[in-house]
Image (cartoon, rainbow, N blue to C red; front, top):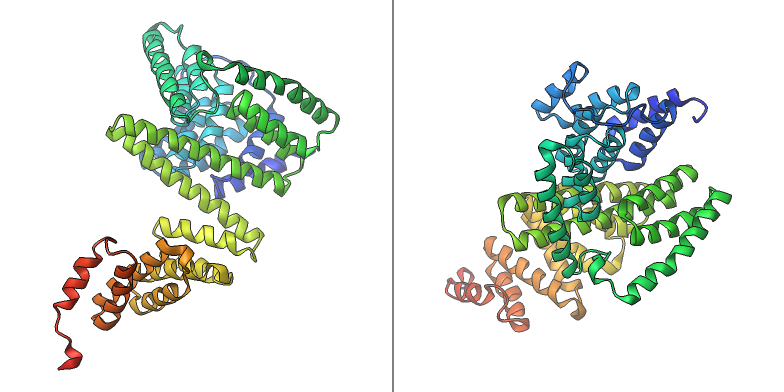
Length: 433
């Protein structure tokens, strides 16, 4: 497809429209556009405003039809890949779709198209701050700090970012220490990696298909430079390897780790400042990570249908978002791994109870109680509690007393088990009448 970029763009555009959160597709699409059109003709401020070519996007955005925003945007950037307004709108759509890495990719493309544009830099700074990438966020504000109308806002934002970076670093959530606190050991360690980085870059120049060198280089670049630079290295690895699945999965794992790092930053921010805005940001990040994990684990179950571990991980995420019917399907397949029989039966019981299939829930709780070992005490307590409470709800008082009594013997202070047993003891035994 390299000799026919138009054909590649046609195929990749359909892939991006169909799966806007698929990062390998998106990166290949943007890279192919760049290869066809060359670098931006003029870099500067584009005064990001809606134009006549953005009518469909504007209408879709107003209706909060975010997938249509992406679709409209794909058609625009096919012929105009450096349309910063379009790229920002697509980034915003991905934000609302909770596709954080796709949002990052469109913001990076907008910044490349218009590095001096105020709105582009402000949106990039906001995103980078939410990910805990404070140095990169500061760099965005610095680029527009000389714009008269925004100089005060930029200076204030940079000061706040410096403070937040220091606070977060003090809680051990930033991989790179602040310059004022770097110990001699850390400086020596950082310096010692520089020759290795150089050697790896040279190895890649000699052999562009050397995947292992790319992956090691990404590790060192992430530590010594930034996540963004590491992402660039991995994108090159993906392209050079022709979409090697090992590289794809390496990128998936890193993106999940980076997303979780951003969530930890948001958690720390919410702990120190319990505002509605911080709470909303944290909840969006949590939901976004769940969706990202579902995409990754769904892809892996397709690649490795016999791997019950991926089935289990996918089922847990489906359960977490409330998709109980699909979670049940995946849990039932993961039951093939007998080592997980107890915990999977417990999860199945909870899913069946959520969809009001109470007899199926009861059977699975019973299996969980019988299968969970002494080394899985917390899970067994949960299974006993669920079984006892559900049995009471189904008016099976004998079973309810049996399960809750066993639980009380294990942990009398577990939740409200004592009160429930007292209540059951006060109910007349109809079978004795």
